[in-house]
Image (cartoon, rainbow, N blue to C red):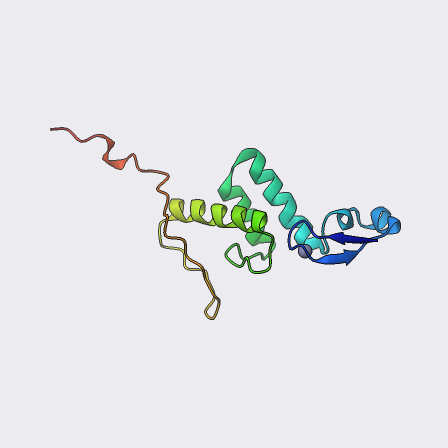
Length: 120
Ligand SMILES: [Zn+2]
């Protein structure tokens, strides 16, 4: 029985004994992708980008490395990355050299209340 991973779209073999031993086999081809899927589903529920970011990096997932992932998954990863970036400023440069980084130039300022109290 063939299935497609909900994270990367890869085809993988699935059988009913998989279901008993590894429940994640019902949705993804690897345990890592199942982990990503869970984090992203949670993020879709609570929109907590920081939590999602930390959960992913704890697992060793590079949020900017979205090559080969499904468009919907990629979109969420990019969204989380840009939100987290907007919060931390530009201090964090944790991208290893030699990786193709697709930088999106729509920086979202999440805390732009600094200039709210301009008195004349
Ligand atoms: Zn996968």
